[in-house]
Length: 129
Image (tube, rainbow, N blue to C red):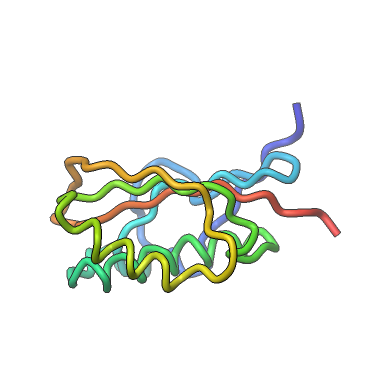
């Protein structure tokens, strides 16, 4: 098995739990669930589903970039929505974030903590140049 490498979110200063923001194995990057947080304080940033979606995706993007990739390297996302009735508004915000071929995706309704509306994890393939 290839060596695991921890990838850290560049802005994270607060303790938000016992996990790695990302784990790189070979060219595969596995990104833990990200949410609408201020990662310097650990506080939830409540907003509309669109605002929380874009903030959450920006955290995913920063982890990918910390591993040397771009959002175009993301091949799969799993999204947990607090309210599946937000799907259309979330989907529009999500679609605006990705250009070109969108990642494969699963979206489900889940019970989320701290009143957040969304959590997204992702998988990326980052070519070593």
